[in-house]
Length: 480
Image 1: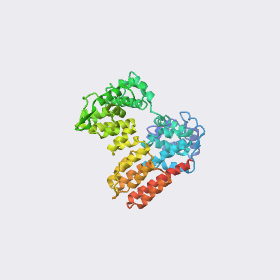
Image 2 (image 1 turned 180 degrees about the vertical axis):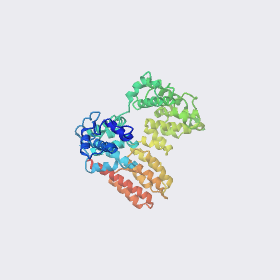
Image 3 (image 1 turned 90 degrees about the horizontal axis):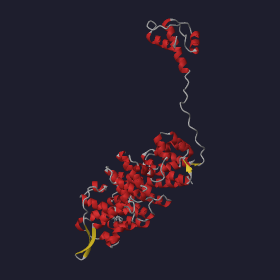
Image 4 (image 1 turned 90 degrees about the vertical axis):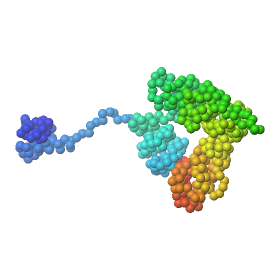
């Protein structure tokens, strides 16, 4: 009796599916032996006894199947220094926090480890590889790849293809510029999705070279507006390109110096409308289309060209009156150009007229940046809520860590009268934690401000910021 016959008879009954042999015949030897040693039963009871013995024998004797594929080769021995002790404990706590400040401290730990030749402890590799898959960690793929070590690279290679590629192929420079050039040169490139074509042009923009001009000029005729706009931005940032010269020529032709009523003014003429102008601000900005085109052309012109064209320095030009109520568009274009070219002279001149142009602070040298930051804030006492909010907006635009002069101003204005709401202070915690220097003196200064503060929410956040500064110093000591 085969096992299939036995199962059929047990399910349907002997009358409908009687086996053609005695119970136990045709079954595994261990089952036949158990049947012979068990008390003799016949009929349906005997059949069910044999079925029960067969099930138990098969379950007890199951052998796990062998792997269909070969096991991967073991990881290579770890030759780098592995972070241990307090540094290991610190990383274990940081990588699982899940908040913005925790992510900032994780990046600080990883950067310090990379600079000092340490790698992540093996037991924490899964957590670190999980962290880099989150949005906060994705932009730090290259940093994570630098501290994985041999075991970490081996573990990443065993993970799904997308994770392994994201970590192990993390770019150190502009992402995929050479591959993007090859893609654009492919005759079939125009058939790729719009998002892919735009990404290719953006990748070339990140590493634009003189030999890219002809390639990008072809992209200006792409059927997708986003591709044309990306190509225009890349050509504007390519010094000496024909497109950049044309934009500068059109912009300079729109502005002249003239004497009106015993004073010199800037006479501005709107450019002729260009329906094919490949600038996003022209397509989606506020105001009239020709005014938006004026701003885009001015933004595409190097600020130094205006000094040569109009015979005035930046400080004089930004203070001159502008005709036809076009000062807003002209100055906005100048601000965009100063930020794009990182022209500190024009940025400083524009900040003197537009102290709220926070995007220009990052262009200035450190000393001038601190002075411009302080000058943009009101000097009256006591500090108001609006002043504190404006201070935080300015501070968030500055490169970190802040110089001591900026830190002093921030700590003087962080506690206004009346105080900021709890949610405003909590939202400012990552800005303060990233910007304030982590030396012991700044930490004590923060704690002193917190102790004097009468608002419990503000005091709690300031103490948390002080703890973060102390943690930054501790990380440096633990990875010494």
